[in-house]
Amino acid sequence: MEESDSVSATRHLSADAAEPSFLGPARDWGSSLLLLATWGAAASTAMYAIYSVHGVVILGIVAIAVLVAMWFGVFQTFPPSAIVVVLAVGAVAALIVTPPFINVAGNGWLAPAAVLGGVATISSLVVFWGRFPAGRLAVVPLVLGGVAFAGMIVGGVPNIDVWVIFQQSADGLLHGLNPYNMSFSGVPAGQTSNCFNYLPVTFLATAPSKWLFGDVRWIEGACVLATGALLTRHVVRRGSGRGQVALAALVALTPGSLLVVQQAWNEPILVLGLVASAVLMERGRWNWAMLPFGLALATKQHLVLLLPLLLFWPKFGWRRVLGTAGIAAAVSLPWLVANPARFTQCTASFFLGEQAPPKALSIWRILPQPMQLPVLIVGLVLAFGIAVWRCPKTPAGFLVSAGTVFVVFDLVNKQTFVNQWWLAAMLLVSGIVLGGRTLVPGAVDGELERC
Image (cartoon, rainbow, N blue to C red; front, side, top):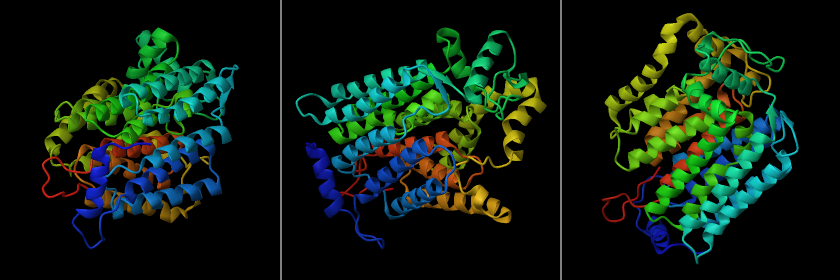
């Protein structure tokens, strides 16, 4: 496998030209550790999708590894290309150990779709073939991944409340109903049937997919692919090395992606919104970056954790933070005004008052009750502190910081499932892809931007 001259040169600079600090000389192992830990979290939760002692121990180790990598510096030197090979092989191994056939009434298409997903993942390595432009070769895993997502969608109906609620909300909108006033039939026993528990962009974005194609999951699969395609196009345009282009395409096939699309979770909308916002920031379109971020914020509640983080990004600024919150508020306000009690009950009270689910992939329920909330607060303060102190205030640094906050939040929150861990992994990997350049534009004497 060959690397571009620019990647080799920047790696040389990271070893020889970085300014020493009390933490020692700059190394490029931080991004490698972060990628391996992140990928491991996504693979582990895809394989062990419900609570188990060994599963939570793995996630605890992952969270520690992420914080250690952040503390010692996720340097903007892109990790060795061998890491990308390891990630691709690991993702296929996770598919083999636990195919994404859980919690679904399959019809025979799931197995071929999973096999194609594995082929798509391995095909990301064709980007290293030097005879052809990396950007053209990166189309291969994206196209194959898209077909695999389609197979997951047509391969069966998921046995989960989320899919039922999204499908019936789309029908309700078509008939002029307010999804927050609806109750839902056909929800599996023991799951939520009396509330739409997400924010309005969830049904506004997925409803057209149901109206046009009969299933809300088509738009969710498209969001995952669009995230990978957007990152791939961006790094190709700026002349990044083949390893970076390969990882950009591989983002769409992060472990758990097939399962997330199959189960209809709305995290793909969040990922696309945040990554699109970061790409717009890097292109200097800071005002436009508010729009996808604001829409993501109006999709799922816990993204509000990222608003305080953005206050520390000077180029974004507090005015744009308020503008982003304003976009989310403007989208949500009509539904709040229509029925304040119902909106508040379904989007806030439901989560705050719910007991910790026994299947949650976190340490909340094994902590003594008096320690649960203090551990959550201390964990978030630690994650915010390390992210703000150690990360550059760049678009890539924001994605890495956001992913770090969510890793810690997921570990200590009372209600955490596969989809939340997948979101954290997608943000961290996307941040590494976006921040793969070593030298700061305009930097002097080889000064390194580091996170």
